[in-house]
Amino acid sequence: MNIIQAVNDALKIQMRQDDRVVVMGEDVGKFGGVFRATVGLQQEFGEDRVVDTPLSEAGIIGTAIGMALYGMRPVPEIQFMDYIFPAIDQIINEMAKFRYRSGGQYTCPVVIRTPYGGGIRGGHYHSQSNEAYFTHTPGLKVVVPSNPYDAKGLLLAAMRQDDPVIFMEPKRMYRAAKGEVPEGDYTVELGKAKVLKEGKDVTVIAYGSMVHTALEAVTKAEAEGIDVELIDLRSLVPLDLDTIIASVEKTGRVVIVQEAPKSTGFAAELIALINEHALLSLEAPVVRVTGWDTPFPYTLDLEYLPSADRVLQGMRKTLNF
Image (tube, rainbow, N blue to C red; front, side, top):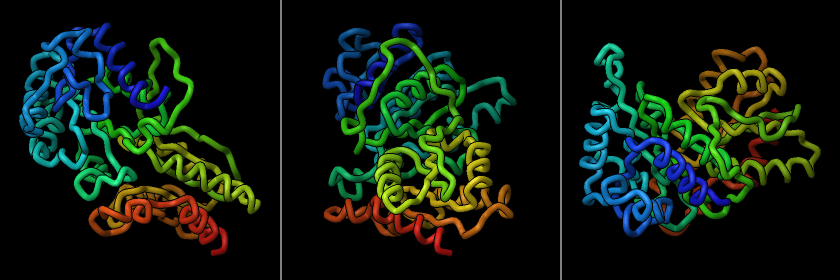
């Protein structure tokens, strides 16, 4: 199964179990979504539960918030994460704050699914990785699966809890990442990272599509005798800080990989946390391997994105410090 199929399967399972779940967005109904993640849902659940909306992101999210406050479980799709900004007021000033402003009386269980990231030659309006805007907003959870198994389990977990979630799907890996996925029901705990490979020389931390780049780098590092511990964060908020710190205390060296621009990205927050909790365990400064501080380019997207060679270079830098 690939990530598209895993997302579709999770939506079907939850919609069959809970008639409060409503999928909505641009072309999600009859067409099945621009990436086909919602194909077949309108045929099974009808137009009242799989809703084709106008091209209005603020309207989509505002409507979803209202539905959630009336007891529904909306799962809106923002077709590309680059399109999410017309809805930013609804997300940050409304959706994220309902639990706090009501003193815990009301929650806002909206799960916004949105494809993110580069590598499909989409240019600057179809390639951005905007997680830092949302990890900086208290009240939101931010989840980023890297593979089909996690995509299904994390999405089911997100739809079964009461807080708003930004569910970022790595569109470059939608069909490229394949793996065994159980047919039935299961969840993956939000806020629990996975150690994909244990090692002793250096910790590499990644999420989403960058996990696959990091895995390629790990293979190259092994050929040089570098023993890498690789962590897939799976969710940024909540964050599994315990797994990160345990690894840093073991290896003393860290490389963080994100495809978003370098400045004030989520990697910077990770570095701050590592410094606060494990400074005396570090043998070298933490290295960031990131996208560049430019708008996402039309023609050089693979040069913009971190490569396995750049990640390997980061490992050598911290090991030779």
